[in-house]
Length: 152
Image 1 (cartoon, rainbow, N blue to C red):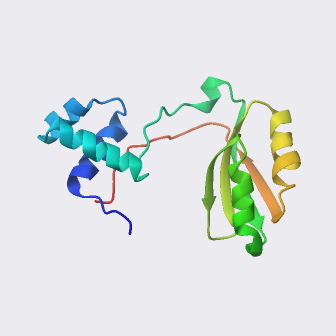
Image 2: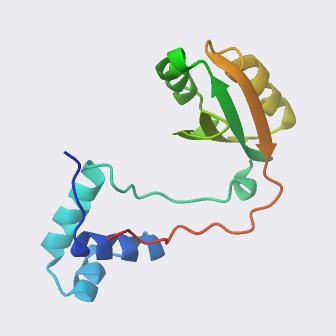
């Protein structure tokens, strides 16, 4: 059974979305709860894979020359195999099973056009079960926000 968030969990997440480096003590003071409660709830949120605490970088500013997404059509009988193989690719940081005109969307970061060619033609299109791909390259990030809150 999937764990339901309560308002305290939601408030902790909201604070972390604004500042991932906020201390447990500051969260506790802001929410008027104990630091031990924050620590325990935060660990549970991480253990349950509801949140992850990471540094979000602009890939262009840390050496990646090409950033984008690939929409993939697959043989429906080979979904698990394709997802498993895509998951092994270091260049791919996001994979989503989707509805609509494509079956899978992935996001990638590569250093060069040659690295993109290798990713698409030597790795992705050789995966058994992939029928068609469409690659889109990001020219510029216009908006990148991660503080959308929770549905609670």
